[in-house]
Length: 296
Image (tube, rainbow, N blue to C red):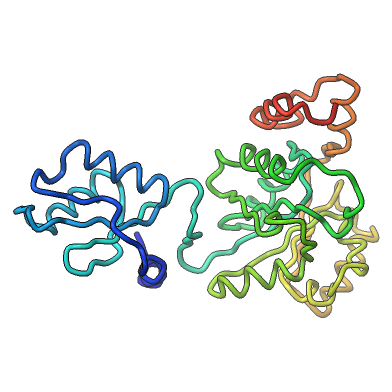
């Protein structure tokens, strides 16, 4: 169900929309319902108009339409109604009440089982409501390295996570070839969704070199989740560094990770050597690697 804030946002968004379906004297025929269905699937947010030659009660027509199509009422002006139904693309990025949301960026060339295990472990141990996965078109630390086309990497990520409702794809870092730094990503989501709490997720190797990142002090003042590459050892450099930072920021968390030594480099090398990568990547990703003849 839409909140008042969400409904207001959609109302503003649809201000200049024109009706895409007219409902005439024959009311809700199969053709009309199918047309509204197709419009919702394509656009999520649409306007419909009930014409003056329709003698039925407009409110009853609307209610029947909403129930049949699983859509929600946004607002109306006269006989023009605005309705909404979220599809898998979640174009308007509507989220509910205050949530704990993880941000997990990477090159994902390709995304593999190791990445998905990290995500699932983080959901389990940190009680996050969702994690946003951010493929990067041009990571700051890999600007001069060869990478698979961004659109294909985005497609692989989408295929890998689409069956998990707690994982969501964002192309914020993949819209063009610009270099986007972690502090900019954090600022973007915190400013756009101030009602939610964001946690940046990073691996041990990245965390141990975070002092070299741009505006790293700002990052270290945010919620941070660090996952260990292997089991957590009390006297390790990783634990010592986290304990040192915790003196100034209690919002840093260390979680254990299953010791599965999988990397994107390993997968690319196996493909190049004509060896199997089955079970190292999700099946949809495996199919895309084959389809696009990647890493050969």
